[in-house]
Length: 313
Image 1 (cartoon, helix red, strand yellow):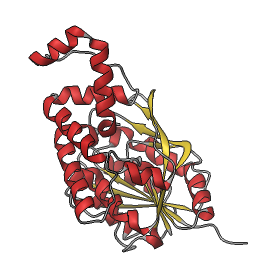
Image 2 (cartoon, rainbow, N blue to C red):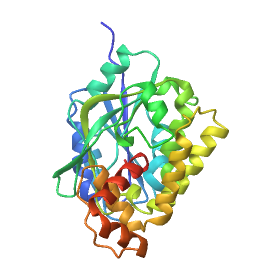
Image 3 (cartoon, rainbow, N blue to C red):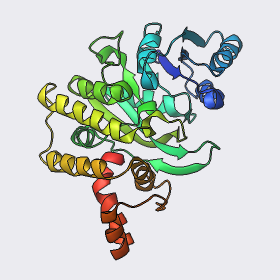
């Protein structure tokens, strides 16, 4: 009988103490048993390291823990690279310290990898939860390689903390993330991995993605957008990414939207487009927006949602 593949789950942690225990527990309760859990504390100051040490003591055969006294970078990508150096798995699963993996996540992903040769990266669908664990929305992404490739120029069609990667197909099995664009390093790295194998997302919902006030991806949306645009341009001009022609006018529309709207509005739009909440016009309108809103608030919202969806989805 063929031995099942070994999986290394890596959780980078930075001041995630409020949500860390459920994240760790969700990996320990996976139905797939050939797992090691590598937790890298990325300069936490909130007691996260004490929680990590407690779990390591209770599950010393399954959990490895490492600590950086200073924060390595945004979004835990450099910390994940550090964890990778200690990983034994043929497959590497990324997990965020504030999210929850459903029990069959790893099992379902390994089943897919073992029946779909040539796949380098595999994600899943996800429910969106809030700080109180209430389900407030759903993140849906395309499942096939072609759809994922085409949409990469418009938005990130992979739910990052749901990712599992075939380590043997990486250009360097000891390094996952190219740390160049800060919080958006995953987007940049996955662009670089596109030529190395097929991408896919399982149709099943196997993650709970948590939205809260400290989500790094929801802070400084304007800055993140211009960062993402720089990544897109590098992908097209240097990484041989074949962008659909429709990308370019959409990018112009996106840029106009981001330049015009205030930051709080962008965050409201993000929630609205994701189906998490309805927009409430709590913010002061620019003069032009007052005119549009007075004419037809519903039409204004509908058009904004249409134009913004490719960036904020």
